[in-house]
Length: 215
Ligand code: DX5
Ligand code: ZN
Image (cartoon, rainbow, N blue to C red; front, side, top):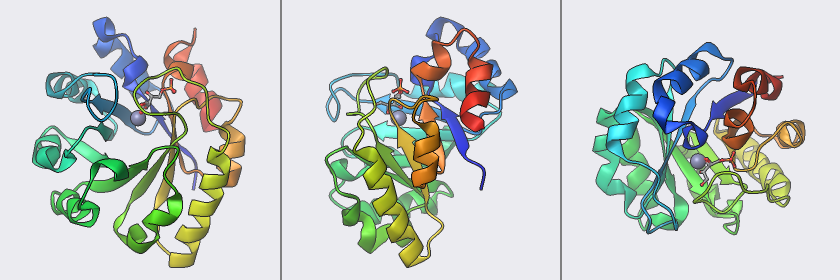
């Protein structure tokens, strides 16, 4: 499968959101990655429903919504109504992860689980069949523009082995510090989806940088 590229709108220019959404539409990107932060699960607040609604109005590609919030189950219906195609919740934020994944899928969305850098991938083995996308955080969640944590490669390899052993079609997504410098190594290790914020939006030519990741 060709690697999927998901530009993170957290690094977009919010004064020119329509322009930046259209740039992603016209590029070789596959998904829009949308980071929702509540200032509790992570030490930052990004944006909420009205901004997601504005993005959804212009986006012509699937919305990959990454919830960095406590008790994400309270908002599953809302994010479904706003047009999320993939809804990712954090392992560390869920007491009843299995139940929450069922609730996401009952709404017709793909279910994602994100893991903080310190959380071992082996914890997902018992429920890997229920997960469409595992989002491995390659930075501590909360901010764009941080440097890539090198131990992520090993986690990708371990997770890939679990997925192959269990025979699920679960995708591995990498989020944080992704650039043209680590993309090919990540793909080699088993990554299927690359999220990139600063590498795309701080580029002189974002469409070109997306194409760079795509190849
Ligand atoms: C971090 C977010 C990421 C972030 C990635 O908490 O989940 O999606 O936007 O940004 P870069 O690519 O700049 O590390
Ligand atoms: Zn994210």
